[in-house]
Amino acid sequence: MTTLLLALAAGAVVGLALGGLGGGGSMLAVPALVYLLDFSPARATTASLVIVAVTSLTGLLAHARAGRVRWRTGVLFAAAGLPAAAAAGALSTHLPGTLLTGTFALLTALAAWRMLMPPKKGQQKRSASGPARSTATGAGLGAVTGLLGVGGGFLAVPALVSVLAFTMAEAVGTSLLVITTNSLAALLPRLGAAGAVDWAMAAPFTGAAILGAWDGKRLADKLSGRTLQRAFAVALLGVAALMLITTLN
Image (cartoon, rainbow, N blue to C red; front, side, top):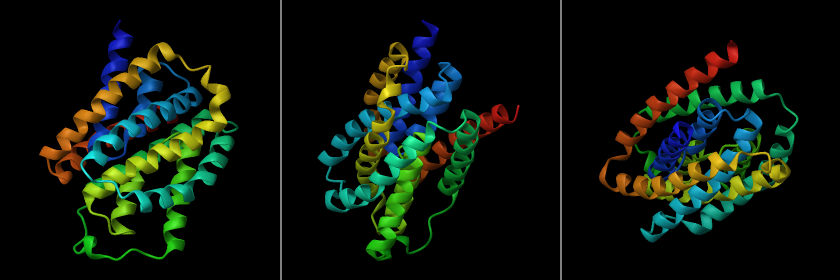
């Protein structure tokens, strides 16, 4: 019963992050699966992709209803990451769990640092860069998704704002489209390993995350983006510290 409650609580937090910030769900899902529910790193990344894909799709529908998704640009941006996500997903099955966990911790700390940085003046006025830069950014996000089992939203949101000149609201909504697409692409090479996932824990985790995504969207409507980002960044720093300590021991 205690383990089930942990799965439900962790799922709710993951959903809140995805629905409210358009990213970061995997940054919490993987360590929660590993440290709270005793998943191996490999099984945790596989289960995380399933959880994030389903939850992101739920959040995407909620933001789409509010007109916060730029479909055409989002599809092009996501398409650039599909080949990289599939290739990196296949590569990840041959890498040691310690390397994946350590890399994940470093990326978590980097994401927290970026979220704590104040926005640059005139950032929203920048015009979109050329298609080559947008394609390269999308491919990079796809590689991160496939290798570490993360949706890439923690990098997609700032990329959409700074590179493609999206508003924060549009970036959050469109990021969920990118995350859903990349997560599904990265999951395909892992389908053989999906049967090894403990669905007795992963299923309630996913259900709680779906409900949390709708609550996250409603919370984002009431609070400023900077307030949500700062609170989430503090949580990410704690996760990064825990994972680094565990990896080094």
